[in-house]
Length: 230
Image 1 (cartoon, rainbow, N blue to C red):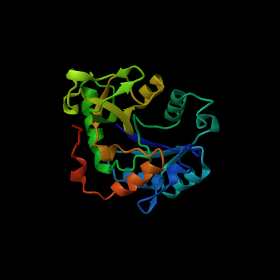
Image 2 (tube, rainbow, N blue to C red; image 1 turned 90 degrees about the vertical axis):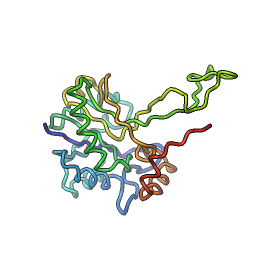
Image 3 (cartoon, one colour; image 1 turned 30 degrees about the vertical axis):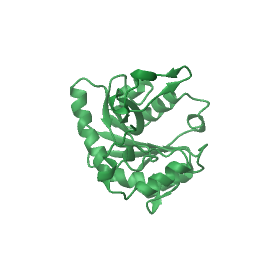
Image 4 (cartoon, one colour; image 1 turned 120 degrees about the vertical axis):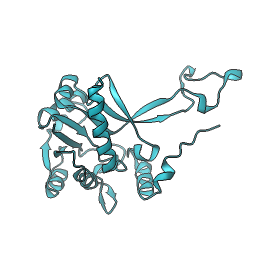
């Protein structure tokens, strides 16, 4: 089975200008991710998909495949998100697709390799895809009040709250043809690949970028400690 890793990047970025090529680890986020994926032996092909000629040229300079997207597949208005996913999958080859965002720079080669092995096992067990997530226990509210705990005498320490998850977008794995069918990058029954808080970081704004740079060389054992409020 062949795995194609896709790095989706686009020219526009609303919160952080030129986010995808922001300086990081002696290079920039895009080239950093290409370098990481090149070290994953399970990956057959790396494709950078973008509307940006500059980013596509960076990708070609690193010897990876490129996919030029028309502006309507990048402006976040003309085409739906699902249409963008299907469009990219239709224009690359490979049995399985690994979405690897460059804004998740603390997902390292060892995480991709582990996720791929777990993915194949998960498919045999009946899951339809793999999604990286961070597990957490926090007191949550909506406009009507608490949603996962009660006020007053029934209040419980956060350790006793039910485990919740949020999708990190760091690793998303599924069969290419199924992604086209779903118009999405994972199915309704994904295997949850749990990442710690450090590895789950996704750069969306300037503060996230500062955190990623600060956490790059931190002692990994520290990131395994899961602090919960009392």
